[in-house]
Image (cartoon, rainbow, N blue to C red; front, side, top):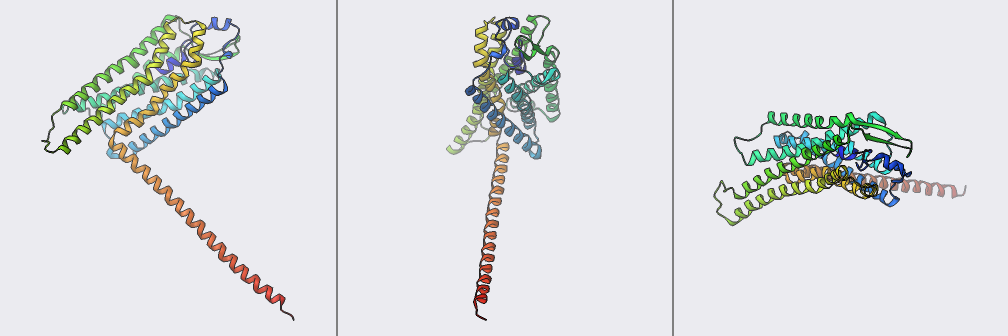
Length: 379
């Protein structure tokens, strides 16, 4: 499901737990009662900052490496670049706003930003999910349906365009129903969805769950299973005569299968908890106490897991893509060597300055000594 939908269900932007705003306000406590303690706040900030730095650094590195190296301008890497771009938008647009609203439980950004920020969250999250499917599709066509089924550059461009158009389309309803509203009872401004009928929001949530989780998971799972079985049972094109060659071929197969398994597990672990909680809060008719527990304890962890997926995507695809990994290692080695040279030059300059200062000091001392001797000589 779209993370932005999860973030704005019911009467607030972050957690989606408040299906009955009036009942909540009638308690007299208001939303101001939903405040994390100092310890929890510190953990939230540190956790979000860690994932934010990982996500921005990793995805910027992937985008930069692919953009600057012509030999990496392949169909597969175009999808990986698009995935890194979408995940970078998730970090820049989703994480800061979600963290601020989770901590202060107030919307300080106004109505326009309420609509625009959550709409852009939906677009970036949708693009990330659909690109994961595109990467799996590209690998499926390249391995299972080779050679006639391979995706070419023009087709990849069309697919990427469709990804963004579809992501925008599924996010438009949120931009329409979202409003920044002030609640005089709790003295809180919230970025709130106002659907004509409550059931419409529930149906929208369910539709996004199917479109952005169930269908992608089934598609990715099916294609990666086909890829794994095809690689494992495919006969070698060249006769393998030595044990070392056999072990090398098996190791390569296991390497690819490990990557596929990691991608699927990461997708499920990072996405499923948030989807389940969103469905439960929309369809479960939870009590106020249950919603409070979910908001205070469950949603922060689920959102962190969701963002962790965007931080891990460049790590997984960069690590298992040998060309990306090789160039990345070269960049890191050059950066480290450059830093070492600068450090060595700095030390050399310092030693030279010390030597010059020592020489001048000795010279000055000699002059002073001579002057003293002259002054002490009787007339």
